[in-house]
Image (cartoon, rainbow, N blue to C red; front, side, top):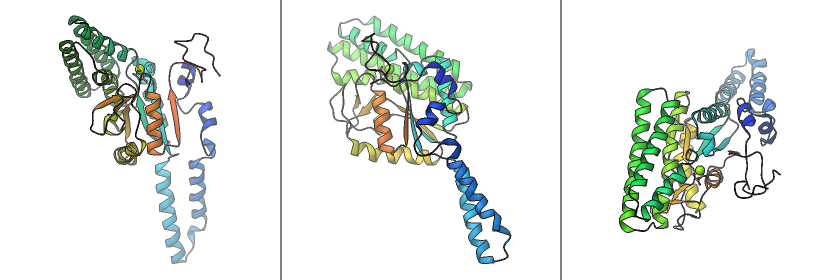
Length: 325
Ligand code: ASP
Ligand code: MG
């Protein structure tokens, strides 16, 4: 099943798209938490002139309570997943960041992102060239990946020091890609475990860029490697999550961040065995990551941003006759 947001939907979501308003659980946004809080404050204000000290103290307590509530302005936890095309160009990366920026005014947001579009394919191409003894192509691909991420970072991150930090982190990951390809070349084979280590590098890179953009927009944010929180079996390339272990780890890492109004930007697709060996959930697995993380944190809603309109009968890249339901 393919869930999707059209370009126009994405453009118009600043301030929440009507479709999303419709699907929000519990209450209509205009009559939501904010409305209820306003009423609560009024309730306690009207009789506030009372000379009864006990009543005054009680009212003061409720008033404080109401004020704290107003500051929080939260509708619950929202998991937002952005696919490769939603972060694949500077324009879409900025648009995605703006969507997150708006949503986090109302929600505690957990963001899940894919690699920049096409990056996972390039990484896996590198490993298959390495298997066949081709030493040069992985090196060229590493350069291409370095440039691609550098250009993306340059286009969307203004602060030089933040940009340097992001570039350094991604640089280390791409060095790692080159080393893995070197090892695969020497061995002459790529095990599923090695392929997961290679394929994970796209998401492990993109989280740094998106998180930096959010920070520059004034949204406290932290890049999070899902290897720290999503626990799976060792069925590399199609690993199955252990929801119990994942829930414990996810809650202990993400909930304090959410409480501190910080937006975690988590790698989709990637996970780890209980021993911390990197696994992946299978190609296109970051939607699955979003669902797993949403379950683990007890999210109220999951929004998925990807590259087709609505929900489709099958993958339109494989079956051109696929229809929007
Ligand atoms: N980047 C991974 C892939 O291309 C996962 C995803 O995009 O969902 O398969
Ligand atoms: Mg992808």
